[in-house]
Length: 346
Image (cartoon, rainbow, N blue to C red; front, top):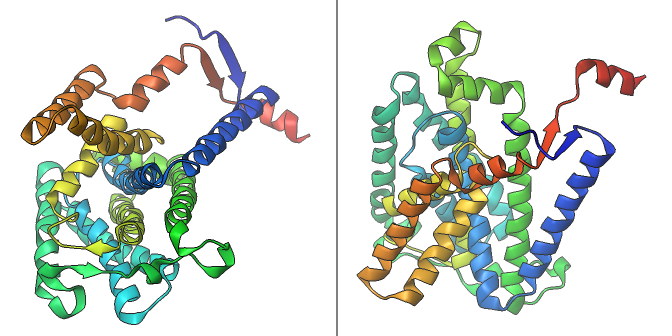
């Protein structure tokens, strides 16, 4: 194995310079995105929202090994929570997001309970049932959700807050920045969680439950709490999605196709990687868009599917997994030893 061209000690001045350079690059990319035409800003906002949703799925499926095919239910519950609170109770849209997050955490915790007894494909079938049931429940509660006819949120109700100084016509830019800040916060949460003792317990549960349990990991707590967090993050994305589209329908964006889209984005971007959801969201938003330019109708779907198969075949660890492997050939961050940490604290 070839040694990297540059070895950087964690916490060193060079390491901090690289981190600052990365932050500057992210800031420049976000500023560039905000300066685009409204249609492109809308596309990028969609990418940010889907990246948040996939990050939630990544916690359960990528890091903990709990295969879920029903995350469209969390996405839909978050969206309809925002929609109902705004339309029926005239609540400020931003204030609905914490409510959507809490409700989806509770639903995720309840869905995670069967994971205490079953796993693998059997757990996937349970989540599949939740995903299938959600659109039917939306249709049944017509007075609350609008049923099959759907629900429309008026543009005035989604106007940026007055303190921002933005007009109603700048709603797209406002939501872009809200989604960007939310994604950054979610990625920081995932990063800190997966690097903590809880994250080690999650990965141990994914790799070998019996060995993890024998090492003192409380499997039941890990599974239920992670499923709750996963649902909460995906529900948060659903609330942002409701603010983005302004119109909700059970047959539109909350069917099993949405779950498949989220799973596709996860594995294309790279499961159990921090930035995989971002790469996956870019893929599920822009590949269909550009494939529709090349062809129309069913042929567009065939091209989209072929591109995804090609990506998975050539990069089984995902786009970010390949990029990480390539980067390690050039730069490697070496962890600081306990002795070095003691010297720095003296």
